[in-house]
Every structure is written in C-alpha cells, then in structure tokens.
Image (cartoon, rainbow, N blue to C red; front, side, top):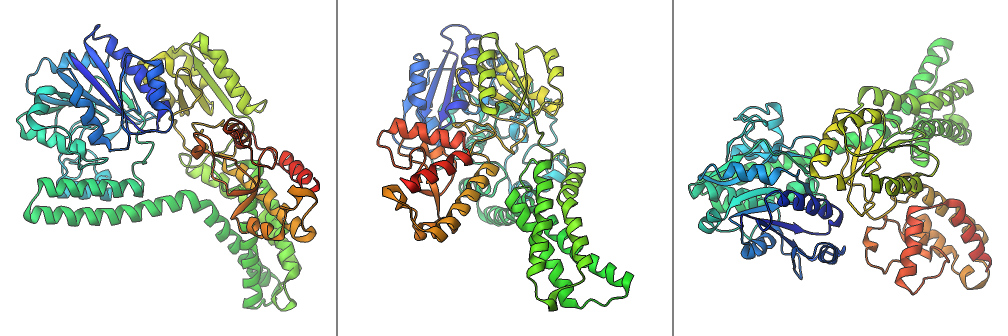
Length: 630
C-alpha cells in the first residue's frame, strides 16, 4: 500500500466532513487499494464517530475513550498504518483532488525525502507562513513570539522561524513541517520514532521534523500542491491562549533539544516573547474592540467642554470649572449609555443604530442636565448645542472609522446581499436555508456549478455560500476568488447546513444554530433580550408576584437577580446532547416555550433551538404576561 492518511478529530464534525470528502477524492486518483484512511477520534461529543461510521463504512475509525492529545492520537493511527508513506492531515483542511497524486510523484523521485509539506491557505484565502519553517532557535523563537519577524518577513535573520528567505512559490528543502499536512516516509519514522506523546498540542511537528533531519533525511516544502487549512478552530492562533500553549510546547522542545547556555537563553527569550505578545494582544484587542466606545466617550467629553469654552469666549461669560466639567462628563456619560443601549459599537456598524444612539445621547444629556443643581449648570444654550452635536456624533465617528480603517470596520447593509454557488441538486436546499434564516430582508443570488466566470456576478455581495460537495480544488479556488473580490466565502459541507470558514469574523454563523437576523448567537439580539429582562424586572419590583403557580415565580428577589445580570426571566431547558453550543445567556427563572421545564430531551431541544435561532421580544413579553396571570 502506498499511502496511509491519518486524521485526528475532536468535536469538529462539519470540518471533518469537508476533510474526509476531499481526502477520499484525492485518494481515488492514486488507484484502487493504493491508500487507506484512518480517523482517530479524541472522545468527541458531537456525534463524529457515529457519523463517520454510518456514512463512510470503509474508513477505519479508532474511538478513544478520552482526549489523549494530538501526538498520542496520531501515534495510534500510525501504529496500524500499512502505507509506505504516512500523511498526518488536520480535520480542518481541504485537499484538491490531484494533491496526493502530485506529492506522490514528487517524493518518489528523491530517496532522501523523509518529510514533506505544502502551501496552506486559510479560510479567507491568505497564505499561511507556517507552511514552511526553520528550527526554533532562541533568536528565531523570540522574533516569532514578539512579532519582530513582521518587520522583515523575507529576512532569514529576522524571519528564520518561517524560513522567510524561501519564496512561498518555490519548492525547497526546509527544516520544519506543519502537522496540519505532514507527509512522511514510513522508513524514516521507523528510524527516528513517532511523535512524542509529551507534546499534547503544538510543537510535536517541530520535534519530529528535527529528528527526521537528525536521521539524515531532508524535509521538503513542495509548492505545487496548495491546500486549505482553516486554522485551529479550538485555539485561535495569535491569541494569548494559543501563545501559552505554544510556550508549553517550546519549553518541552527546549528541554529536549537544547542544553547549557542555549537552553537558558531559549527559556529567557520565550518568557520575554510571551510578555511582549501578551501586551501586543491586549493592545490590539483593545483597539479593535474598544476604539469606537473610547472615541464616543472622548468626543462627548470634548464636545461638552469645548462648546462651553467657545460660548464663554464669544459672549464674554466666565463659566466656572466645575459646571464646565459637569456638562462635559454628562455628555460623555450620555454617549456611553446610548451607545451601550442601542449597540452601535457592535461590528459591523449599522447606520440606524448609530442614528438612534445619537438621538438617545441627546435626550439623555438633556435629562441629566435637568437633574443637575443650579451650581453645576452652564447656559442653556450651551447644553442645547452640545445635545445637537451628540445627535450626529456616533454616525460621524463610525463613518470616519469605516473610511480610515476599511479592513477592520464596515457598515452592515439593511438588506444583505448573499450568494449561493452550489451543484444543481443542492441549489434549492441551500437557497431555502438562507431564505429561512433571513426571511425577506435579503437579496439572494443563486448560481450553479463552480466556473470561475460566475464569480463576477457576486461582486459586491456580503457573503457567498459555496457547496463543499463540488470538490477540494473548487473550494480552494472559491476561497481565493473570494479574497480577490473581498467576498466573505463560507464553505457548506455536503449534506449539512453549516457555514464554515470565511473572510470576516464579525457575525460569523454558529455551527449548530441558525445564523439569521433573529438568532441569539448575535450580540445585538442578546442585548434586546437583556432590555426585556430589565423592563420586566422593574415592573415586578413595583407590582410584585402574580397569580397561580407560575405567577408566584415573579418575586422581587428574582427581579433583583435579573437586574444584576445573574439570571434571565426566560432561559434554556438544556439537558440534551449538544446543548453546550447554545448561546451564553444566564440561567432562567422560567423556561422558554411554556415557562415550565419539559421532561423529554427532544422537546427541550426543539424549544431551546427555537428560542436561540428565532428570538422575538414580543413573543417573550406575551409569554411573561400570560404566566404572571395564570
């Protein structure tokens, strides 16, 4: 047997479906009986094992009773593999149909190749630098963890970690391969050993690559067989959690391969890199998430302060410091409260929310000003002028951000333009799914097959759903076309209604829930639910409990719990398989659907999913009113 493909899976059923489908197509080109596919499941709870066994009975499945980590699970597959070559393939990858044929032809021409990697592109179409790497020496690791490599990405000195001196389109010998696609000669593995079980996740591919080199083999970066790698859905690369896991892996690698002063330098540089990355991650996250809110507060304060100053300069009236400060602070608080209430800081921005935030801030300022004592008041004209400025301020700030930072901020259209590109037999299915999710508030474009000429018709669309059943090569081209046209292309696995990958992460669809405009997976819908909770809590504090068994649940104590955010009036039943993927909302005083907990798991699942994917505040308010009177 020529090739054994090993996939280690953990709670990624949708991605696993895409990976298996593309891998089987690529294996078919090697000829019948020339390859085998082994799936090792690390104790998933999403039904992956049953799904693989029922839909692909020819695949050998190893279901582990616990999550033993990436290395140990792959070793279980390698132990039973029969191929001359072993491929470790991540479940969040898609391989074009000719990938295995191309790679096999290349490696069989060179007896020195012990391992091979290929170019990888993420779900947005961006080439991933970890497709080829160097040995993580202390200096290379510091440049990687600190981000110094970005200053000179083609420099071997600053970017030795990613082997920056080797162009991404060149085939060349490298030092370290990626475990997402790690093609290895079985003879090399028999000589140097399998993956080190001490590495739970990350670092095991670096260790094995180094041992392959130490065994006298070469590692090759083969540029003619690109694949899709959506990149770790469980731990986002670049996040602080990833950096910590990476740190642990590098610590093990350091203890194993370095000694003396070099080991000390490696540990010191890794710690320094961790601190630099932590600060960088914090700063980047703060700027991206909090910048609109910070600008709102700052501009509101400046508007209040400067208007009073200009009024005093123009009229000659001397406004004391304390009243001037009071108006500036009131304007800042009004802006903060209105933006939080209407959610105009959510990305992508919405013009209606921005306009409502401005109006809300203006009204809030007038209300706050009316409560101030005479000693803290300035002229009424100044207060009115500041209120008028606040009306347009949120819209102006967001328009400026979209103009200046279009890659990070954008407007959400009132009627999203969504495209569907699928095989003929799936077109109606996916079209119906999109229509049910968005209803009438959408411009839907549906096209058949995967011809490149079709993509021009999607220009200007907000999202394109692509049928993963069209094949790995078509998926790769779709993602690359999407990047070229700035389209948010999501891949839909065959037989499933899941939208995976994508160019943008704001408002990305959840795997198990509908992703329409009314889903609680969206922050703005959870905010509406929170407003309803606050309104009903205040009502219960005033009126007290109602009648009947359900009415007695509306106590003032429960109202205080809701006001503090510890509970919600209507919560999920849970208790069914997969309920961990429901949107995060507090535990309910009562339960969605009928107010009372249901016994059957199937009914609980139906009610919970309806509440999660089709939330309506009028429906919930009606239920609360009825329950209080029962």
